Image (tube, rainbow, N blue to C red; front, side, top):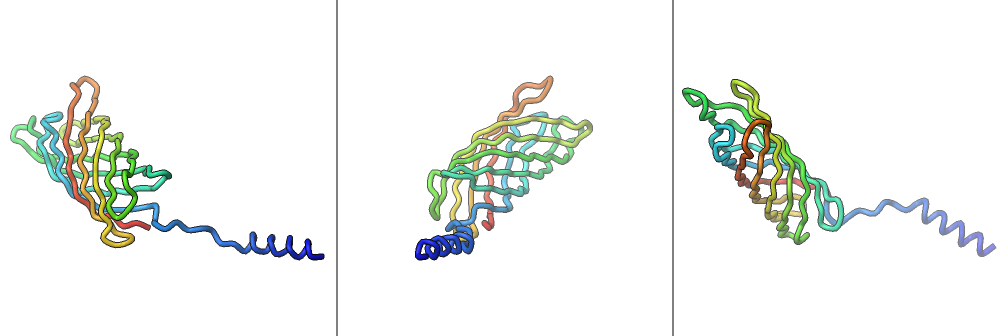
Length: 172
């Protein structure tokens, strides 16, 4: 009888257990502002951008990240020069060197750059990045990020860009 009571008690404990929760949140959404120096990629001048970013913590310090940038660079090939619209969504992975209040990281992104001008220009890019996030509360961080991209397009030389940004993110 005692064995049945122990087994019943163990079964009740297992069925009544609630899922474990991590000490920190593993998803984030944020906004960033920055500057993208195209180095005359496809005749585009450097420009400020507004970014929407998100991250998902995977495991062992790795995060999957996404950053989508909206920008309005000048088309230096047009006469006269005029503003055009550019979109640059990216997805990548980063490794957190520390997982405390101060979180430096290194990573790499694969990005797609589309520029709407007289004709649409499409570029595929890859590039390393470094950054630092500082948690001002348990669920809000401020960060800085730098990235160097190599862009490839058909019938064009390999192009590069240097990007720097600051942002704020909410973790949930």
